Structure formats: structure tokens, C-alpha cells
Length: 334
Image (cartoon, rainbow, N blue to C red; front, side, top):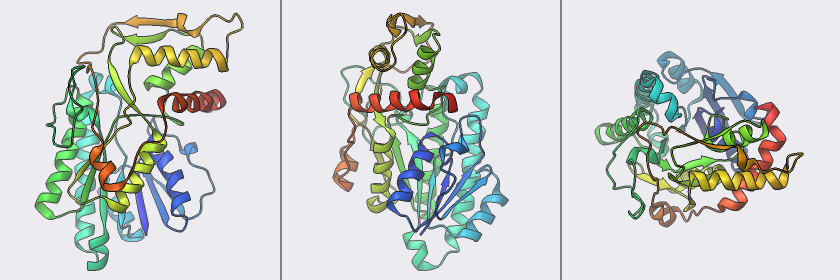
């Protein structure tokens, strides 16, 4: 089996490659990544058996076509996307181009390749589209978590672009029989995440003695999924997932943004105390709220747990400890 991973130098993609190579050591990995600001080629160890990196955009039809016919993958996982909500608010066109138009070029090229493959390989082929719980919109505090049957209700250009990609992927299954599987995860955290994201931004701000900014009153609720748990869920989906289906991947670790910031400061106070022993919590400052800021994300992962026997392992306390430790060791290199 050859796997084509797009966006493999990014946060989730690079963590997935490391888990994949330990699980399937003899299967070739092709990593296609355009290396934008949020990617880092150093996330992947230099010496990996059966691994090849190719720099490029998934929207480049000729490049993708050459890769497909040269390496003949029977599994494609698309992590490639613009993912930062604040940036999508400032420049939505970039997100429409990357997450919709480039994605359309990519999946169409993959569909043509799949149609021409041998029957046996065609039946085993899978295309997995990585998505986000933000496509469902916002929940009130007492509302039940979203399921795979929940309607899409996007509240920012980023989530709208990801929802659009999901619709395109689903349409390719319904119209052409192209064997797509869509995975929808909650907020990820862990090693290698770009410092623009909430958790590493808090850690970096604290260590640099900068303001730790919290939007609005900090009462927005998120469910936090350790990235390795997410990657292990994807391995299960590859084995047991059914084409045409979507699978929610969550961790049942709901916490407000303010509570999480305070918790991270407490961990830093113990692991890397200031010289004056003043808590990092004193750096927390509330800022003007983000436009269209969703109140709460929560998804029901019953479907994937029943279908694949997957369950998240990492609790938020242990996962955050591991994450802070990693950033303390690697902050200079990111």
C-alpha cells in the first residue's frame, strides 16, 4: 500500500505520519505539502524508511497527476487546508481559494486517477477528507452534542470553506461513486502545533512575559482532542470506515477558554516558575471578542466508537502536561 498524505508537514499531518510509519513500516508514504507559514518540514524526521516529500500545492493539477500515476497510491488523506479563523476573517478569499477551489482541483484529479485504476485496486481505494467540528456552528450550554446528522451552520469564512469542501467530497461519492470518507474532529492540541493557535500561543506568551490574550469573557467552550488520539482514530477509520460516511471524532474534554488558560498557567508555574514566583496568570488580559465567535463546540463520537472500537485515551490533564513539556523543550525550534 502506498499512501499519499497532503499537508503532512503541518500539525496533525506530521503527527499522523509518525504514527503511520510505526504502524505500517513497509508501506510507502508520499507527503505533498506547499510549506506555507504553518508548515514545518522539520516536523518530520529526516531519515524515514519508505518516505518521500514533495513540495507543492494540491491545486496544481499537473503535479498531482504526475504524483498519482508515478506512485499509484491506494489511500489518500487530505490534511491540506488553511485553518486559522482569525486569518479567514481578515482574508476570506485565501480560504476560498485553498480550501474550496484547490480542493476541487485535487479531488477531481484523484477521481480521474481512481476511475482508471485496476478493478481490485479500485475497490480498496479510499480518499479521507479531514474536517472540523466548526462546520456545525455553535451550541448553547445545555444543548446536546452534534451528531453526524446535524446540519451544517457555519459562522466564519474558515468553517464555511471546510463545509464547502465536505459538500464537494460528498457529491463526488453520490455522483461518481468515488470512495470518500469524511472525518470531523474537535479542537486538536499537542506537539508541533503552530504558535498562532490558542494553546501554544498561551504558552509562548507566558514564557516571553507577554500579555496572554483571551477573547471576550473567555466563557467559550471547546472540546480538546489530543492529536495522537485523533491520529489513532484515523488509523481505525482507514481499516473500518465505510465510503460515503462521516465520522465525528471528539474527546469529551469540554472546558472554557478561560479555564484552560488558567490551567496552562498553573502547569507552567510548576514546571517553569518565574524567578519572582509570580503566577503566569497575572498576564491574562481580556480583549475585544472575535466577530462571530462560536459559544460552544461539542460532538457525539458514538458512531466511530461503535464502528471501529476507537476511544480517546488522553485526558485533558495528562495531555496538557505532555503538551507544555514538549513546548518547553522545543519552543526555540518552532
